[in-house]
Length: 151
Image (tube, rainbow, N blue to C red):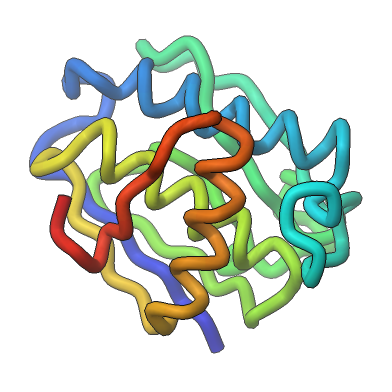
């Protein structure tokens, strides 16, 4: 199981760089929906399992990644949903499914933008993080550091 967790020290809507983090994450999600993860990371499949959504609680956007392309809880284990930013404490159990790399790429970009305003814990190996960082770096056209290196 791959349960990724992230937490914020205060309400996400109060974090100054949250819109910038979300914008970068949306670029990654949109690119994988448009071109497929395979175009960025040859070993990943399942690009139809990615969706984006909107939020109206003070933030203009959110990233929503759901296995099987559904964001509604009906028919989807709520633990499999990657809803970002979420609340103060959050988790997503990807079960190592294809979208796991996308979730890690999004979390890596969140860490770059939010630095000390987000804490991330994950059982993912350094190699798995590096695959995800490759996706993020390729899509964004910039080097994304590994969150394990404590940005």
